[in-house]
Length: 97
Image (cartoon, rainbow, N blue to C red):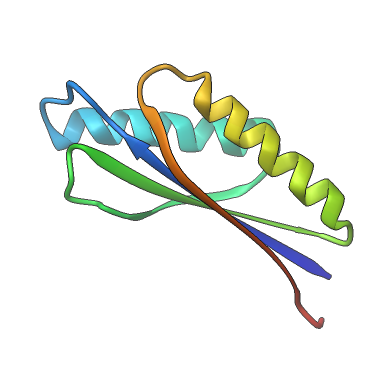
């Protein structure tokens, strides 16, 4: 069993409140979960209006599949237009069942 993790940093601009930020973050999380069936959550920078960090997890028996799905997720987020993508970090590791 392989487990893939992806962390995406979102740089937000023109956000007036944490409520506005959370609306954008929750929207992206919901769309990623719906489109790709990922486990997704906001994992850092909860109190910052300028940045959000989301974490994505995917389990599969094929590392190439995980990599392709993560590439699609990054491209999907990049095309959103409400924020700029910052750093992304990917890791795929083996987990014994």
